[in-house]
Image (cartoon, rainbow, N blue to C red; front, side, top):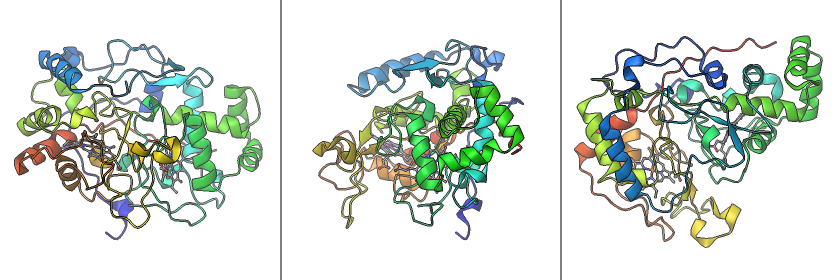
Length: 384
Ligand code: HEC
Ligand code: HEC
């Protein structure tokens, strides 16, 4: 692959015809608190089958993290009906409430190369929307030229997490973003804040949003507010779940059945986020000369050795290569690896076993996963 940034995004193959049709930028849509979203009126009805799957799932999942109960957070949305997917409204922290103006400012900062030490990188350097907010690379290079040891994860749905990074070492999104800014981009918060203060349009925006001149803290808060709007919500599969006829193929429906049942995938990839928010060793570090300790570095619990966060599978088809080390080269190979029970590691999660899926079942699961891609529009900001 000559330039991985040009890699074709692996899109959904469901029999989707009409896309979301929304003309409102998703950032704005998600930040409009409390307002019910314009959806597909005909698609509001819930399929009876969905409820049945939910209870099957409840029986399957025992003692996993309640991925969607977020402590110390307030919801920015109405939380009730009218949402475009089964995900609740994205939460935000009480000390950094999401507002449309803050999101708009955070969006400019996300795409502004002035935040980096070299002046050549922005957050997008490793988190491209069309690549599922990842970079298409197995491992990326930081602003200082050093090679990262872990693959850039998706930014989709990070608002719903309670621990950030592959090992969950950051306990707030704000702390995570400050670290990313410093380490990935060699950003110096005080220097950047001073520089932005000299740009009249930025100075006015910070005054309006934070009532102050730009500060490192305000920059981080605005970035976090923007990143919290990166939700992979309504997908073809959501439209199917809401009763839209012929939204997805028969293979995708069969694949969902395998995913929830024989394949045991939903034990960890729990809908509607398709993640349990937990950490599991799936055997990728086995046999490496210097195994990545993963979650163990945070908890020091032996059972957490080389355990990594369960990624959301929403829009997973767009975000390859896959896994924390970027070793999953194709979506089918990645699913096959999971279905075969993973690598041979003494610390591998006992929840991951060889489920003996047939080739057809693997392909059906892949067909299902491709229907989880969302199509919200991205309007690039003008940088002051
Ligand atoms: C040079 C590449 C690079 C740049 C630039 C970069 N990141 Fe990342 N980002 C990564 C990598 C690699 C990780 C995972 C590191 C780990 O888990 O140890 C990551 C993780 C994250 C996560 C955590 C996601 C999760 O699931 O826990 C968020 C959020 C994030 N970055 C946001 C940002 C923001 C905001 C910026 C700009 C300030 C940024 N990143 C700049 C490479 C980059
Ligand atoms: C024991 C919990 C568990 C089970 C069961 C499980 N997964 Fe995973 N899955 C994970 C974890 C944890 C990761 C990330 C691990 C890593 O990168 O080290 C992952 C990664 C993935 C990825 C890559 C996502 C990305 O963004 O990189 C895909 C695709 C995936 N799993 C699909 C499946 C499918 C399909 C099944 C069922 C056949 C399944 N998983 C079963 C926990 C699980």
